[in-house]
Image: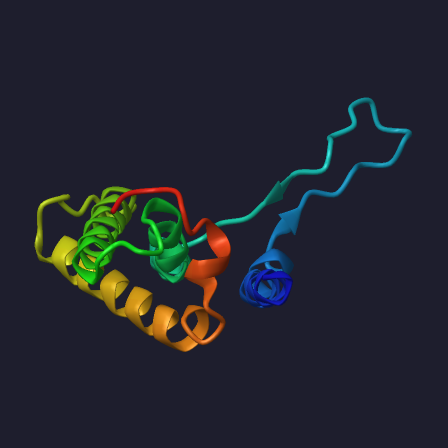
Length: 140
């Protein structure tokens, strides 16, 4: 479990590293000037980047929400619901004013589902993450 958490933290750090480097800070004027301005850092993430990051974490959420002995159908429904919610929230937070109920929402939900399935099969299942999270709590 510790190895999985370390790998997840490393992946997040690698993904957010370039974003943090792009953050801008305001310079503090010299002490002889009347007003000093505190440093301001701004980090802007695109809706698509948040969708990818959130979708990668959907299998962990399903593992926490369902029991280890839950049927595959319960886990699949939970993954579908979380993917749909991720797609809707991502569309709702876009700056271009895209309607929430639109083809973009469906595309984002399908993309979230695909990323969740691939991340489960490629990262979480080989390490048996569901059995190590909370095997006896949740639905199912």
